[in-house]
Length: 382
Image (cartoon, rainbow, N blue to C red):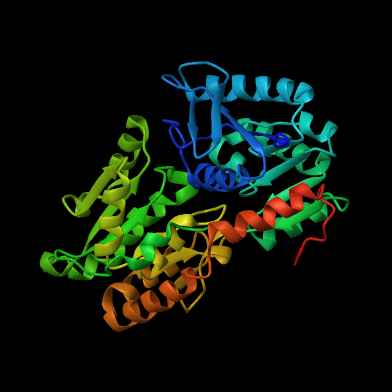
């Protein structure tokens, strides 16, 4: 029996990365596990401190780069990935595109190379890092202009790529969820709580807006604290990120904001099962996997009108959607959902039905066909 064709995939982020471990890393690994039925697959990730090479469901995971800090690991990974791709003999070469660990050399191998883009950072890098943010902004623009084959998670990102690069071939795909969430009991435990689930990235995830909005939305009940639901912030966080978030907690909310860094999968499921609703006021988002997971668990969500959330939730069916950065709209949305149990149940039921349409096997099969056909199979762009 002939050997399988080979596939190399490069992504700085991974599920064990102490600084990232975001939804993009989960998405990449779930897709690659299914690619492995067709290709001999190797995933190259950032070599963080303590990294150990391993295999997961047929995918070899190897490290590139070095360093004791996130910045050093990112830079060294980017340098090594750019060099290695030039000489990579794999039949197909993929890259999880990142403005902060940019790979440009893949554009020199258009017949083999494809980029997976979770979201476009664009001007948000400048808002977050000031003038230094111009560097990733420029590198991201180069990657999008020079590349030829892209897999993206929503139509808005596809449109933006094609405006920059009309010759690009773009496949719109999706993310999915663990189907076990669909069977999770949908409860509202006592004492009640609202849930944020995601990386403790203050700017990207809008945690500054969330904490201020929670303070304002619950101010009217300050004289009766028993009626105020707690706010639980759970997800990936370094000690530095945790301290920054802790300093943002308004004094009026002391004792009502519960920080749960680096929760386990079982703890995450328990939090999803028991919350009133999930809230995520991101300034930008790649797909919004946490919102889809909450919907799968039968919970309504309150999110912002970003590219990613447009793909992962159904407005007024599974979610309330407010404008990005609109503090008044966020506060109003919090008050509406906290005060209306009937609406929460309706959106939660709609969310669970919505989430049933997302399936990793079907998503990966669509991508595999496109990649195997040399990126020439017509892709449903818009």
